[in-house]
Length: 380
Image 1: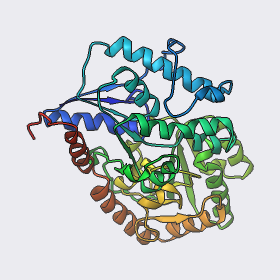
Image 2 (image 1 turned 90 degrees about the vertical axis):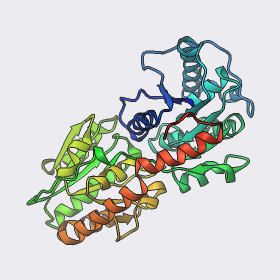
Image 3 (image 1 turned 30 degrees about the vertical axis):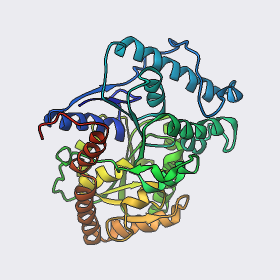
Image 4 (image 1 turned 60 degrees about the horizontal axis):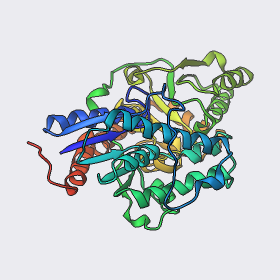
């Protein structure tokens, strides 16, 4: 069976999707399947000029808004790139991992089955990052895309039950959404025995308001008032970095906080820390929690979206309400002051991650779906 995995970002970019799909291709190739990756290079800008039509709504009512206009142009660029690079190729199935990729592929490969995994909510991120208004034209445009995808693709999947419920609110048949949580090759994550005299906290994310790092810094300032000893490591970059560094200075914890910037393979460094913490304001899945669990770190997160589906509070991690630095400080104080409890939670988190978020599990679920579109030519 010849399958194309259609990404938006190139596979070398950081993030759950980009880090997972190349490993999926590797596993399927070992089983004898033909599988390719395709994405839109960053250098492709304003190349596409084809007229865009949606079948379920008129996008022109939202034209003139920067986010909408950029989305439409990127859609045109993706179509242009598909025609340039894939014009003579044929596939038995295309598995898209971004709405633009799915729509552009269906535009060109009209007779090829398209399945779509929705990994995150662009509109939620934009709202939380203060870039668009909830209920505004950009928000209405982006949520209209869910029904368009439902209408034009052959199978809809997502990564958590909570996100399936969210996007189902914009679809005609939400019951048809299938949930396949992300999976990871545990061989990439190597827990390391270590003894830190001071508890090492780490957070890995893009530095944007949606990730709640301002709440984390305020919680750490509260820990400092309580004379709790810690070092906070923040791995990642983004538009909020300067503001976050300034906030850490105002809160008096700059000397306790290390900003690393972007790192290509943070999983090589994470095992040396003790606690992974990320107080996201929204998360469709939260890949970094599963990855941190596979590194044998204790988990502290907010009770939102896919995070709450990964963490059973008090068993394999701690959950706190979003927007509450005091409750977050309470949870962090608990794991800082009780190393045994911290280790037991980390061990439980590792066990769950290996069992639930195994790449082998994802391969088995995808194999079942792929073969439902036609007989595969696998040897395994």
